[in-house]
Length: 215
Image (cartoon, rainbow, N blue to C red):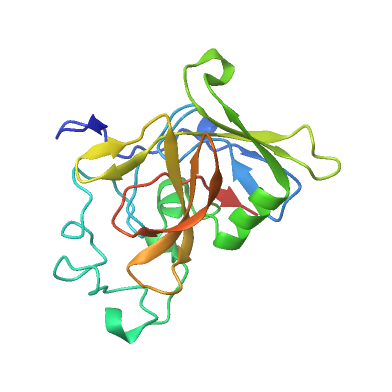
């Protein structure tokens, strides 16, 4: 558990060299870096779902898309009446997408379906000390014919809760742009450890990584 104080670095604009992508033979091209990072091994920035800036604390009280600091008072992305005024938005809009806001209109956060494709059409290999950098994570290599020499690396960056990072180097959550189906207080993220990887529901206020995609 790593505690972060007031002087922790905030989300930074990516350099142009960081805005590179890899064609894995899938429906979208995947960025080589996380938002806020300038190389694949950097963990980058942490965002609550639907927010576009980092902050000191990640709680329901600090979550901007929530009224009164309560998980059942959402003010945007509401499909179930219990959670607030229904707007039937279930996928992040550009102004609420950290990838689009930080990197430009060409980029966005992947959908649930695009992460499904990454899981189903690629091999995932847990790699400690990736390329002798001391960074743990997954090397994801395409299984699509003609693209099997292409891969990306997702570092294990942990997850932000309150003012600290949980499970850094052993675990990570990458947001999708897709709202949870059974509760509007959650969104879908790809969570992984050295033993497994899959999509799960996570509270929207958690600070997680974003790996952009583009067409």
